[in-house]
Image 1 (tube, helix red, strand yellow):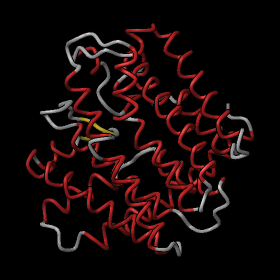
Image 2 (image 1 turned 60 degrees about the horizontal axis):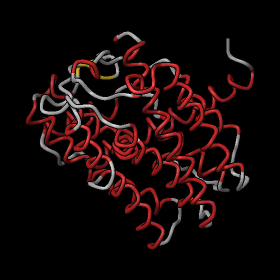
Image 3 (image 1 turned 60 degrees about the vertical axis):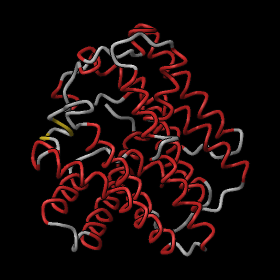
Image 4 (image 1 turned 90 degrees about the horizontal axis):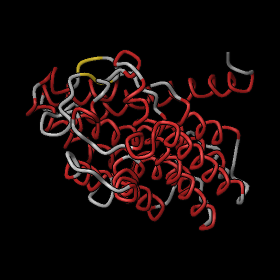
Amino acid sequence: MLTSEAEGHDLSFRAERAAVAASLTAVCDSYLADAPGAVGAAIRYSLLGEGKRLRAVLVSAAYTAAGGTGDVSALAAAVEVVHAYSLVHDDLPCMDDDDMRRGRPTTHIVYGVPVATAAGLAMVPLAARAAAAAARELGLDEDATGAIVRELMGAAGGAGMIGGQLLDLDGEGRPLALADLERIHRLKTGALITASVRLGGLAAGASDEQMTAFSRYGDAIGLAFQIADDVLDVTATTDQLGKTAGKDIAFAKSTYPALLGIDGAVSRAEALVEEGCAALLARELLTPQLEHLARFFVTRQS
C-alpha cells in the first residue's frame, strides 16, 4: 500500500513519463523521416516501447531542484535515446545475447542483428541532435548547449558506458574484486545516471558547488541501481523483470550478491542511497522527489 506521499510522487512520475514519451515520439517524427526503412522502424521500436524512464525523471527532478522552471521533457527524452541505444547493443548476440527486453522481443529479434546494430549506432548522433535542440528550446546559450551535449556524449562513450561494457565483457568467467566490479558499474550503469542528474543541473544553471553535489548523488545512486539489478537477477522472475532472469550466473559474471551475499548487497545499496542524499542535503538540493527516486532505485521489483 502506497502512502499518500508516495502516491503523489507516483502520479508526478507518470505525468513526467507521459511528457517524455510524447517528446520521444516527436524525436522520431522529426528525425527519422530520412532514415532507411528498417533502421528507422527499429529505432522507433526501441524508443517507444514501455520503460520506467527513470533517467528522464532524474533530469526533470534535478532541473527543478536547481531552480529550473521550463519544460525539460525534450532534454530528458535525449537521455532516453542514449539509454535505449545501450539496451539495443547490450542485447545483441555478441554482448549479453538476450531475446527479451521490457517484456517484448528485443530489437535484433524483430529486425535482425545488422539492422539492430545500425539502429543503435544511429541513435547516438540522434541523441546529440535532440539534446542540442532541447537546450536551445530552453533558451540556453551556445556554451550551455555545448556543455549539455558534451556531458551526454561523454557518458555514452569510452570513458562511460562503452568503456564499462568492455570491462564487463572482459570480466566474464573470472572472479573480480569488489573495487573492480564497482569500477565497471560506475561506468556501464552509473555514468548515464550521473549525467542525467548533471544535465538537469546544467539546464537550470546550477553553480559549481551544486554540480558537485549532483555528481556525488548520481554516482552513489547509479551504483546502488546496479547492485539492486544484481540482486533482482537472482531473486526475481523473468516475468517480473521483463527480461531474462539469471543471466549473470549463466555468463559467470562477478556480482554484488556473489561477493557480499544478498543481505550485504542490499545493505551496500542502502548505504549508497544515504550517501547520495546527504550530498544533496548539504547543498539544500534534496527535494522529496530526488529522495524518493533514490530510494526507489533500491526497492523496485523490476
